[in-house]
Length: 220
Ligand SMILES: [Zn+2]
Image (cartoon, rainbow, N blue to C red; front, side):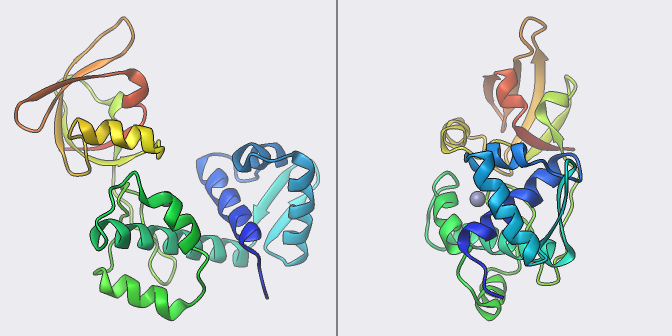
């Protein structure tokens, strides 16, 4: 079966939306995610249903079929492995790799991606802390919580980000808040839920609530 890049992107979008909340994903949610008109989403969903990649129930939204889910998982695997390659081997920073990976994820060839996986030492997480499924489609899991949910006095290590936009990643990088950085929650201000943290051994940083809603921490 041949499948276009656009079709692949839809599968990935449906997978990500389903992961975030309800099992069935609405046409409107997909349209918002893909930044396109609902009418073109409907056309695309018809095509994906004809290829048995999704199940489409009127008024209830769509779900990936088993083969659709396998394809979406393989795409995410490729995307995240290329992101590791770009940061670790080509020296890109974590805010630069996503757009390249959006293109590289469409390169076909299981042998290529499995060799890349081995070459990188079979990483379980990408440069943003997101899990990378293995060749069998199994996901790694690690317990983590949003920084916004920590209590004063909690200590932890940054494990990931919810917001992947370059502006946010650069903002974190500038303050030394990269994956693996340690922090301690010193104070939360009732006024606007902003927080003061100690990052590393000595640096004191104030973060907005918006920032704390987008940083994942493994509490130690
Ligand atoms: Zn990415």
